[in-house]
View 1 (cartoon, rainbow, N blue to C red):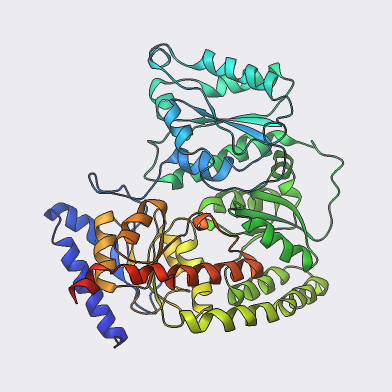
View 2 (cartoon, rainbow, N blue to C red; view 1 turned 30 degrees about the vertical axis):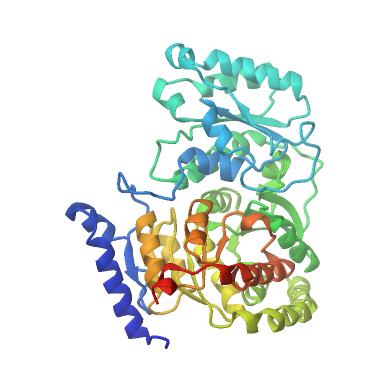
Length: 486
């Protein structure tokens, strides 16, 4: 029997109280501020966010280096990104995000390659600036078709005081203005990968935009130029989004940063509109482009047909009737596909309960796609969200939804045991825990090696994957702990 909204709220508050009782008093007091139940009509979700994780708990967050190298800079395909420091950080972030791109790897594109300065003890003692200079020289000799280099600082660089800015300026002059960007994204900065996004945005502002000048005089603008901001082309997402924008009559002049290039970054100030997918990681540069270059920006959501149609119309509202008519034409074109997908999968997924815990925008943006399939989101939260993320989430979640910020491994397991969802969508660190508990799971950071999930074509893949996870016959061979007890 399903619970009423008030019964759901009472259950959630009791569950939160039960979870907090395990902690020491001080820890319980801190964590209580990050757990709650959404109250309809409130301006945010009622939880505290973007503060340091509690020492000793199993957090699911990453670091500033992960936010810069792994998210913002890493997918820029024609630049080489040096993981400057010990080998582990570069190794761990090596090609793990599935940022698809077009090019010849090792010749003119380098996304799936790892470049590291491989710091040793002597580099910590004597400094690594000379080693960095040598690495840049080797890169220029071995990979002459690279269009630029970034230096992604790991923790030791900031601790020992290496001057990566001076090295970058020196090599920039030595190689006739070749773009070399120092990025101060040491992992100890900030409370999560979120500060790494901000640092990376600022480095683009300071070392790309402020130095570009009239570098591409051959570039001719049109009234319909847009840049896709904050789509990292995981599983081909940016491509499936780009198709829709081009079909409605727009010209995509840049992708930030999945399948993106240095020239696209440099030309972005010439766009007529920036369409922003991942608000958390790219709102900083979007605001800068509006303030300095007068380029407006608008958020969009291409998960599920309902939100896609809303977003296409919102984007079209910034242009003339030609683009508005184009948006309606695109929506109509894919209606038959949407109807077929929903007719096939909704009967199999209707009423299924889902709990989410992801980064970026997914804790809210994917909700519409689930609801298009008749599924219900009963809990959601952000790894590294800020208060403005939780404000935006109020437009997606229903009254009584369980909200958890920077949820610990212990809390998440207890919440799932108590609420008993039909599906959990989270990251790789959570995947096997819940599968071993007998709970269907989808990895919602890299789409579990599937995708794309954006766009109309992506919705068909999304629906198939959710059905495949929940209705897989393997679950008949195992039982969740609560079903065993029953």
